[in-house]
Length: 288
Length: 291
Image (cartoon, rainbow over all chains, first blue to last red; front, side, top):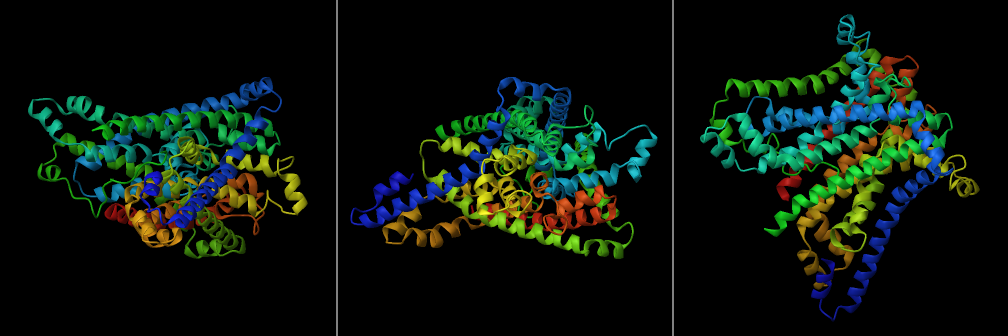
């Protein structure tokens, strides 16, 4: 892009071109230095510390019972959350785009709420609502259901915090979809479900997958809401990010780094997967 | 792109209602579907919101006001606002640089940098805090240097600021790149050709065309920065009145068995977030209208 604009510039403006080039290098330098200092440097520090004593201690840090249980719990709750949100998020997007009903605008605005509210505040809200001494919580408790300081509370917090991902990924695709195919299918006598399965679902599949993967990645790292809701009991309700905090506080920086490296690697793989799906999705559009 | 793409999403005010959807009467099954979604969203999102208002005001408005105007609460709010504003300013300036480089300069490593930018979205804030401990904490890589210079990084505001800037880094970049790509380079080239300096071109040509997208990104950055908790918890040391932000204040109040103070501050943060959300919706709408 910049190469063509440089070619277009008349030859007489040589000084300007050099000033422009100077500015470009300055800009590039500032951009790369900022990212290097803010992201690359801290990342290298964490890898260096996690592997400082070699592979075996790194492996032991990951497989000691408490860390292993925390990682397993984190993966499980993130997976449950991603699946539930994939279903409910798609339904929400579908209802928002296809139907007209009172309160639709309000619902649409409400979807963004979890992105704006601090996750710690979200956690506090859930404790107020479902805590054992509270209205709803007390009622559930009397029926033998514990939400706060138990796994359901963690899932609930994650569901709330990550609700927008799938909705906001699927919604634009549904909006840009032509309705003719759907209507043709109806006319030909296909049921609602058959139409959805064969026409709508294939069209939204890439967006649904990327939204769900992002949801999963976000859920893996969630901390603020979980730390007040989960109770953080080792082997039972201690998630990996909270475990990392515990290790930092007990000055076991290598153990904290080891678990962090695993979480970081997972996140990065998820980001790259999402990126390649999005590129593939864009490519046919460019060709046509 | 890790941040969901909001452009093209229908808005309550501006969206044209789908004519087909409006003309047709919904069947019972469709109403059932709508009912399920609305109930789910209300129970999941609105329930907790009402609960916190109830929790904060359960002992009366005067208690709420008293808890939120204590010295510690006020200084926590002040620190949160200062940190949020500073991190947003830093990320706006560097975010613009990075967005420019990624959108306009095609060079080797462009895609790799693109991936790096998204990382703070996916990294747990606790891990962000840990990184800073490794760099500036005890036995940290840069601790000898900062000690010689006499700068206290960890358990003081510098590390808290870096942590806040880290977690809110991607927003401006992610919102500015699409509008920058859409605006194109024709007008900029024209301005150059007519003798405008790089700075003049940016100020008079580029900035006006990206302003709404930029403001949307800035508001997202600020909202994220104001609510930061995990990374700051790790690096702050949480000295009340000194290095305690609003979120840390909530966390400590819960620990100190002073729930009303925690709920009151949580409600204040929720209200701030809500006004930020309204601002964001406005900027988002303008981004789409001008884009």
